[in-house]
Length: 501
Image 1 (spheres, rainbow, N blue to C red):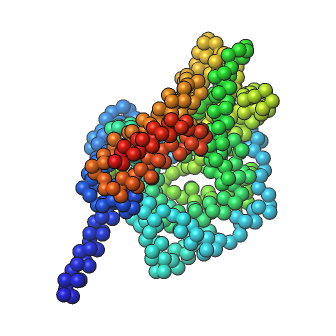
Image 2 (cartoon, helix red, strand yellow):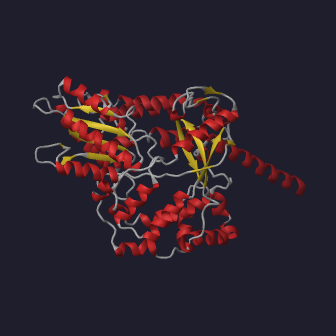
Image 3 (cartoon, rainbow, N blue to C red):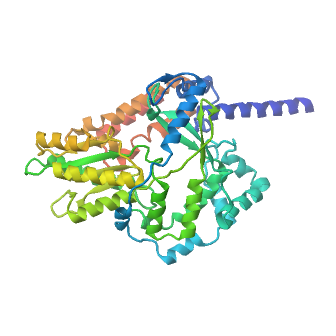
């Protein structure tokens, strides 16, 4: 009987391990909340692996390679070139527009010694099952076995933070490529994901946690992301008001435009020297800036293609900041080279809004203003290293803008015109359309998700979690900005009920 009990316990443990393995491969985090380890998740994991497998790539010369070592070498050379400094221009003009926002009193917080409690706080906030770095250890390992490894980890992290020890040994990142389009072959159509080690994350998150207390003082008010207390929906509402004004403007000699900028590889192109100068100009203490620069300048990379790592290479620039662009736009508006747009006659003049690494610019639709804007973007690119992806950037004109002016402005900026710029904000076009038509994309998105998850593969518990966690969450973002019509709410509830029964 003892052997039978022991065998049964061992078998159950092996079954639990197998289920956890397939749960992680399927990346279905809600599997444990109600559904069983069915064959569907095995098929889902296999299909996901086939989708993410890279079988071919295009080189910079336009040739197509299919061999594993050629694919790995092509990807490595692409990112090595992307992360290599191309030199910076004179950034004194940008620095003039950046105010000193960090006082000596505030600097006492980041300069004070770090404690064990701060490291433990950073570890507790990490997702336990997030993808691990090259060493294979997820945050769950450190959280569960902290009583064994905690002392050594604390000693290492405090040595880096307080004593200036090197970080090179753990600052190694695996780059994994996630396809953005079906069957991509060009590296532009992949989304690079950086997999860091937990030890590096502990150091970086401990620094970031201290920065949270005063980050709002050094980030421009036009930026509605990254800062606690600010909502990205605030800028969305302002943008909708201005776009509504542009659509309703049918008279007047001067037309106006809204320019949606897309920064090409925004998180990889900013020069380190530019970042160092900007942070020092804001007033941060030199010792704390050196600690930040050590975290980002000691990094080394390897590209992981289909589970195989390529050669290791160093990076010579990384991270992002939009403060310089805001400073240049403010200066151009101050001297009269650029002008913003008002949503009402007595309202404030809005020249730009920032959405993380995307930006919306507003101004007069004239050839002269377009030249000034183009020069401003070129100056920012030369100083910071960031460049605008003109293929993905678009212009929206007010209704009174003449066709000739539209064409001239578009040619100067090198961007295409768009009549529905709202889609770049992730929300429906509710201006100039009937309500039923404007929210059609929400119903289409829900229908698409329902078709992807056929009910015959899910148990009753799985369907319940799917409806609550996935389907009902789709309209949430739109509901933060707009009041949904009652008829639409009834239609959505009907779709959920039909799927449930």
